[in-house]
Image (cartoon, rainbow, N blue to C red; front, side, top):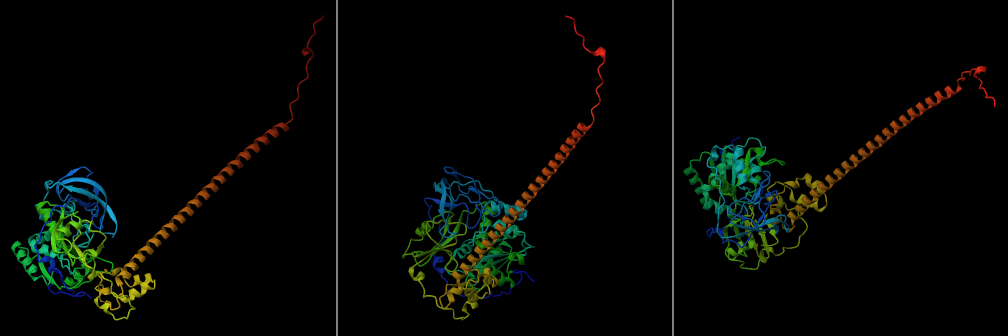
Length: 525
């Protein structure tokens, strides 16, 4: 089979839905950098990553780009100082995931001097060993910037079969998110160079940059820069259909290759690796300029924002500061969402700070969040089946979960649900299907944990019984040995007593009579 770079045919993934786009709301204004906030709150663990080892303490002065933590593995991404200043404190701060939770964070007070730490570019990256290049990217804090902030080093260095193609994902399918579109407009050459860096690190022979077909101008710009760089033979720019959720990893791979990612597998199993365009730009910065990942583009938008726009925000900037930089609230905001309206995470506070996966802040009003009609019984219309991009039977899953048949829902591939929200959005009965699926997944996880704990308890019980049985056996063995010794001792004692008795029973030798001369003499008085 040809690889995606050679295959010009596109394949439409199952289901999906064309949605009204709102990207132009934020893209019609230029990209700006907001003023420095009074404090930056830099989480030690970015997104779902493991926390790295802390290198600074309260009171320490830090320079811009200085490492604040050190990764202990590919799954712990280091963080760097977004600006110069001093560490005021280290303590819990609200984070976006899990919703309503807190995580240890460094509080950095900027000094406004923008003093840089020494930078370490890698100018000969195209001749570097793959592991050396991945180590360099990891040390500069590279993480997936499409939303999940998955550690890039772990993705690049995985024990995969031979990779033939790297897909750079520029298909933003959520209707409000526009940070990647703005990035490709502002830095097309950096995105392409970063794509080559990632391809070299992954040992991929070909690169495909996927752009939605509504952004034809961006696609032509990327092609022009690819020709100028002389890489058009290795790198191709492909336009994919503007449909939700086209930007999903599995859906994008199917669109470009015509092959489906295995049920329990990853795109790497097909020889394909997927990275976000912002991750590619960050890879360019790390090797060309030695810049760590300390800032990213964030779309601040929504009906409640006065002047929606894209902002180049420092990692650790509170969302409240970005909202102020976008003109503040224009209408009462009833819900803040990190990400898009379909798959975004509701935020409990605008005190939460930007991390490496923060791509969009969506402020909604009551008009968008008012309750819909009450849920009605399922009428088996099949609309949810039509739009499901994972090829599931949403109404069947709903009925199984509603009946508490969670194991049966697992047999119907509940784990494959990507929680895109399409089924709930088209349901004429207004059933909150995604809520049921999340509940079903949580219940399956809980039961798996319960089963694991029961298995551990069984193993502990069996180990205890085995230990007690061994202790009983050892006691019996000790008793047997003691009794054996006692028997031997009694036998020896009996032998001694028998010997004494025999000795006593022996006749005594006769005593010789005394001779007259042996009689004592008396002295005469």
